[in-house]
Every structure is written in C-alpha cells, then in structure tokens.
Length: 250
Image (cartoon, rainbow, N blue to C red; front, top):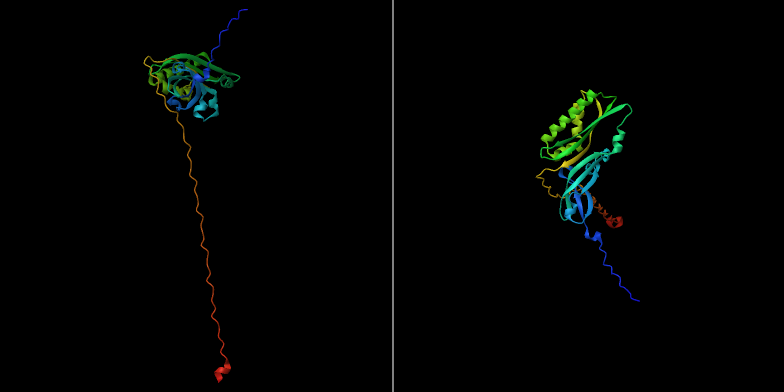
C-alpha cells in the first residue's frame, strides 16, 4: 500500500505580535488629551480610522456631557501616537427623547456649509417649543438659524466652529436670537458631519498629550520645642559654732 505524505503545516503567525499600540490624541481645540489606546498593523492602515468618545471624557465638568458623542478621525501617526480631527458629533437618542414633552412641537432642518478654510460639513439643527408652532414661525426660526450658520462658517475656521458647536455656543446664540419670534424650550445642533476636507489639507502634527501635574504641598514640619531643664543650686547652710560659756568666763 502506497502511503502519501500530507502537506506539512507551516507556523501560524500571531497577528497580535505584529501589531503595535498607539495613543490617539484629540485635537488642540479639544484639550490634546489621550482618548484611546489602539493596536495598529501599519501607519497607512491607521489613517482614516475613527475613534469615538464622549464630551465628558474630554472636559470632565458636567455629567450631562455624557449625552454628546464625539467622533475623531486619525490623520497622522508617529511611533507611539496619532493626531486627529473632529469627524463629527451627535447627541444620544436617549437624550433627544427626554426633551420631547406632551403638547410640545419640534422643528428641524439639515444643510451643508463650508468654513473659512474650506472644510465642508453637514449641520443637523433641531428646536423644541412648548405648544404648537405655525408654519410661518417655523420658517422664521429656520431662517434665523440658517443665516447665523452662514455668517459663522464664512468667518471661522473648522476648528473654531467645531469647538463652538460642541460647547453649545452657537445654539445659545440662536436661542437668544429667536426669543422675539417664539420662546423655545431647547435649541440644539444635534449632529454634525465632516463631509469633505480642503484640497490643501495638511494633517496637524502629533502633539504629546497634556498631563496636568497635581500640586503637591510640602508638609510643614514643626520643630519640637526643647525646654532646658532648670537646675536648682543646692542651698549650703553654714555650720553654727556654739561657744562654751565656761571657757569664756575663765
């Protein structure tokens, strides 16, 4: 009987050993903080990868910031770190549902804009009002918001604009500008999406994450007060000499 030799199996490569770990850092306008620690196989494959986090993870101020999700895209990679830009942000669905009230009405619109430095982004606007809004007032509120977005995008860079959007500064301006039309209970830019980079886009350099060193106060050491012992000098009594009266009379 002829025995056939089977093919020998080669060594199985451990793909995890071929990977290296890098720290993903948020852009300068978002504190240059480490937001993820991920494995990559090569710098080329890491580019355009996306990392998600929350606003609270960066600012760590208000627990309500957990409801704002931030998505960053890797643009540059070094040996151990990666720089990013903001790809977009979005409010959580649970938070938006919590804003809906019985008898309230909402209005929204979606529009594309281009910033001063030629970044294109899509803005999703939403507003909540108590009671019903007629068609005329909805149109007026949308027009106020749209004109403000046009004004800001023409005069601001993408990094400046994205920071003001995430920190709700633009929403606050719209809220104040629409008070004469209708009092709105909540105004929000519920979502943004970066749709196109400028033709002359240059990835930002990789910055080392900012680490705040804790202020350590040196303990104050009080030196013990040493009291010198008081030494009392012994009182020496002089001996009293008695004179014999018989001897003195003789």
